[in-house]
Image (cartoon, rainbow, N blue to C red; front, side, top):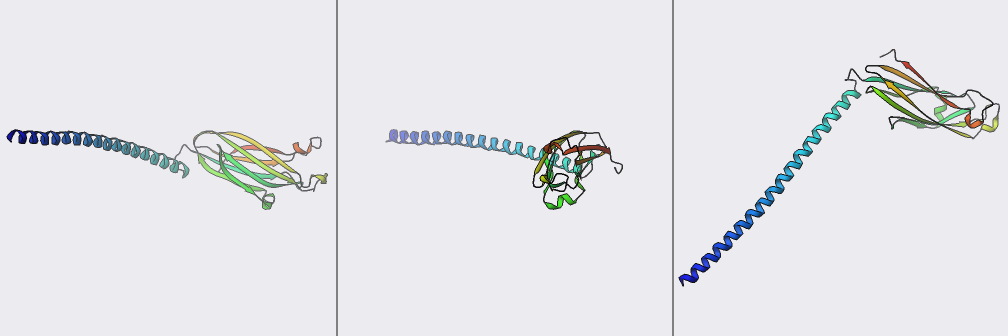
Length: 196
């Protein structure tokens, strides 16, 4: 009987030992998973901290905290004359829309400030699109109802702590020899901003 009891105790010890080894292996696996998750959380915390720092820097630039940032003002002028009415206009700076309007009231506004902001020094691309409608109030009344779409872009180089005003105008050079779709144009004029 002692022998069978010894075998029984040995079986119980062996199964307990196997369970303990198995439990240790499971605990180690769980521990490794927890460690992996902790590393991922730490990595995410670092990325969030970097994103917050970048956001603070962008806010500082946008609110005028960087003395090297340049001030840019973009002004739209409507100089096409009574024969054409501005129906819509859209401006984008470095591919980001900064101003877009459509409607009857645009034609009545000879000057519209479309952007005023601080930007990092360097080149910046202004892209724009204007849509004009013929009013019939010209030598050629058949223009009434026609639409004329103008697209253009302009690269402005900003220097540190510089202030510039970019005047953009829809113009009609009154070239009667040009075909109707080529009678309108866009004029750009860049001037230093004296109010900086």
